[in-house]
Image (tube, rainbow, N blue to C red; front, side, top):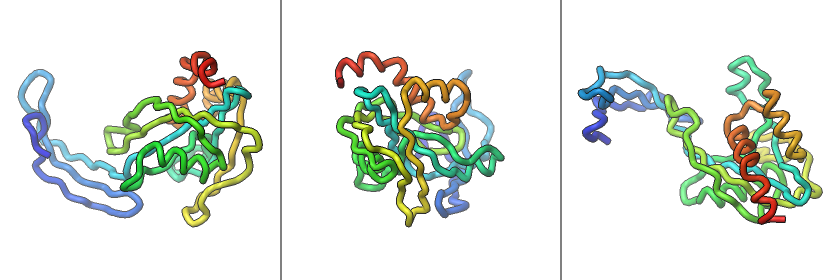
Length: 199
């Protein structure tokens, strides 16, 4: 892992459970030249994520899900968050396969076409996690109810929401999930062009 820009002095896995936590002692190149002092940092390894915002251009609606999030609970916020569909990319799976699988598992939603949006870090100061985000073309007729893999502890409520209402929810701060905010902002910019192509 060492290169001329980063010197890893020590790396130790200090916890391994649902996530893994690695402790690093390292130095890195400074913008003004030379190397930094030795930094002690913990980095969380929890895999990479595929996320999809299903959009029904014929009905001007999006499919969102609502589920309990322990991180929000621990931060003393409302832990039931409205979000995009997402799942961890397992070995031997592509991001596209995960997006389609999770749409079915979490929302009973079939995604006909996947449009890549962006691949980005969520919290690179402490997590290795990246998200591959897609816009998914779907038919939202009949979608709703409660879904999720019970053996994974999932209890997921599905919302089919008019796009204007979803954007209002984001503006009012009712959507607090960063992936979902990025997806809705991207959709705002690209909506009319996509609607002309896919409707």
